[in-house]
Amino acid sequence: MVRRGSSKPSDPFKGLDVHRSPYRALVRVWVVCQDHAPLQRGLERSTVEQEANAFQRAIERGDPRPVVHPAAALRALDEYCAALGTVDLGPRQVEGYWVVRRPPGSRSSIAEKQPNHPEYWMRHHLLVPISHQGIRIEVRVPDDPGVRALAFPFEAATGGFDDGVKPDWNDPPPPYRCRRLVDADTRWCSVAGALVEAARREARIVVLPELTVDLDVLASIRQWLQRKNHGLVAVAAGSFHVVEDGGAGEPGKRRNLGWLLSGTGDILLEHRKLQPMRYGSRARPLDEDIEGGNELVLLAARCGLVALAICLDFCEIGGVPVASLWSAAGPSLVLVPSMEPSETQQTNKAHEARAKELRREHCTRVLVASQDVGCQNGQGLAWFDGDPGEARAQGWLWLTME
Image 1 (tube, rainbow, N blue to C red):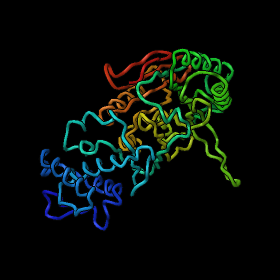
Image 2: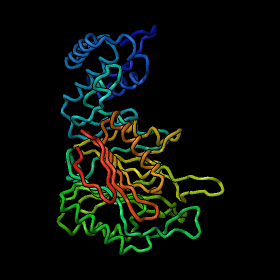
Image 3: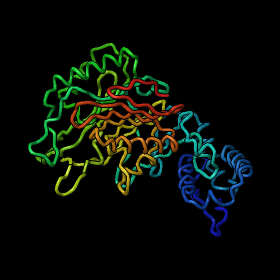
Image 4: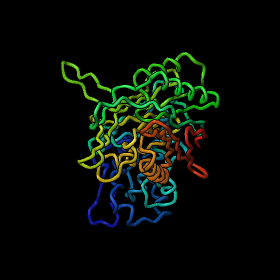
């Protein structure tokens, strides 16, 4: 293959049997197309589409590969791999990427209209890097059949509490470290009420806020899910500060740990907050006394990739790795437990900016459960496909995620 507009030939297939290793070939040409030049030079749409057809026929017959534009090779390999019928085999690791089948309707509005966008030529697959700026990314097929079958549209609930139950902070802060809830029984009553109402409204997903569910309340949630007939598929059970066992006599690390539970109360994944809160002046720091995680787990469902993020993991901007993580991962659904001072709403505004950016780029849907730091109120926020594309409510938000 020759990269048009360049004096040097580029053959990502060198030493590779494309017919026998089409996924490796797909990844290699995708990497070529990430460079600016190939998709900006010599790109005549009708010609490239004809070349893609010729390239695909050559692969199918085992004939010598014709020299084509990189976009043509990308389209041909995408179509060829999709035709292999491997949709049920789950994600696969190939040369530093997860190759995932893209669910219908999940391509970005930008990619659908712009031939100089790589995803215009790759309709059927999503490539997710195995590592992004030091953050490991794992794509996992969940054991739970209800989560695997989750598809849009579905009913959802997200929000917060007005019961005044605060985390029991170390005294005096900072740094901020919460040991337990000051009244776990009252909080469990609030959570149970939300779950009962969610079941009554036939919700499939429920999202609870950051630092609102300690280990005692988590245990109660799991028992409720195991024992009740409710119809819930998954619960993002908030988060809390937890000291993990260091093992072998090593001191444990304090994490802000979040949980995604199945409808039967099993833990589908644990998420360690990637971006601890480090805020304020030296005279008045607002530092979260935890160690950040370094892994993102994505669950492969019928609706696409499902992710769990905690507050700043999702909305932080600037040069930190999480700022570009979500663009690289391309999830279809992100569940975000969050907490912020209600008088500023800065965090929720940042969530909105990130959610709208991802909706344009990956057609991502987002559910945020935001709790006021004083635990006097909470709110639910959502961004989704269709019109008006966003919704929010004080207390609890009940909606159809389309």
